[in-house]
Image (cartoon, rainbow, N blue to C red; front, top):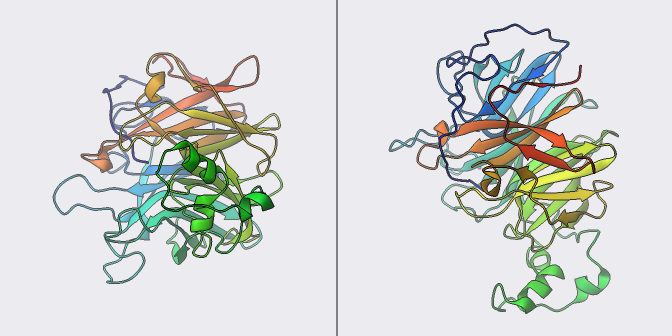
Amino acid sequence: MKNGIFKASVVGALLGITASGCSTASREKTDPQMPLLLGETLLADDSVHVNAHGGMIMEKDGVFYWYGEHRGDGTPGSMQQGVSLYTSSDLRNWKNRGIVLQLLDSVGHPLELGCKIERPKVVYNPTTGKYVMWFHHELKDRGYAAAQAGVAVADTPEGPFEFIRSARVNPGVYPENLSEEDRNAAWDPEMEWWSEPWYGQLRQGSFVKRDLDGGQMARDMTIYVDKDGRAYHIYSSEDNLTLQIAELDPTYTDHTGRYIRVAPGGHNEAPTLMEHDGTYWMITSGCTGWAPNAARLLRADSIMGEWTQLDVNPARGEGAETTFDTQGTYIMKIGDSFTFMADRWNPENLGDSRHVWIPVKFDESGNPYLEMPVDTETVTAEP
């Protein structure tokens, strides 16, 4: 989903970051201090606002790699160029490394200019030594009908990434947590949407069955590598009505055929995932077009286990009803601390959408929550 704006949430000097995006204080690499980004302009070394949206940050050998959607500036003819990369040694000063997965001026190619690449995520595969990028991919001139997952690889985190394929997920395979009874249940594709009987057959997998032969839809997404090294693709599916979690193979470049449905009919997208003290947590958003909405919170004891959507908004305080005018894209872990990375979307100029990073805190019950910090607060990750 692409959320809208917004009140202009600008904090003057935040944690030593000047208006030019340069740090006013040095920091030891062994003691990473998480900056707060609260929607201000963030200038890279080229004096241009960081154009990396819906993305994530990966750390490798003391360097932070920020991958994201390169978006147009809203002027006529301006369009997405691909996936951009910025690098930093301190999470404050960012160098523009250019486009690492380039859209092509090649008619008929899956990555033809005019297609959409959204929510790119990159993970390192220790077995192959490759850097693997997954992304939500929509084909040119098809709106959001293709709903495919794309994958590309590179030998180094700087790329360039080589496109492998784009397709829907796990064709011909039922999810593990759809019972045999539900698999065999009849469904009526002409039933009136949003009616209670329609929701009933949705929960029984009507959309799974509809898409079974061609594969499951895959839109807003993230990638998560668990402690045992297994990787998972988490994505909004079934016309954004249901989340799915699909296991990746040992190379991280394909699916194994194992997947589950999460919160059928819950209308969740923008999944972000973390594990804390043995519990897996997912913070998602609702589906309201460009308009921001209240975040949702889900939990499970294992990533492929039973997920429960809690009746609670993880955001707290003023602005919680719109998740502080943002939509989440990734939960970054530095040391023992987690940071909720989010976009404050500007649909009139997507390249100028602002970045908001909020620390994830945990209450006395161990539940995570988000609270917009004051501009004098510092957040230091555990070394």
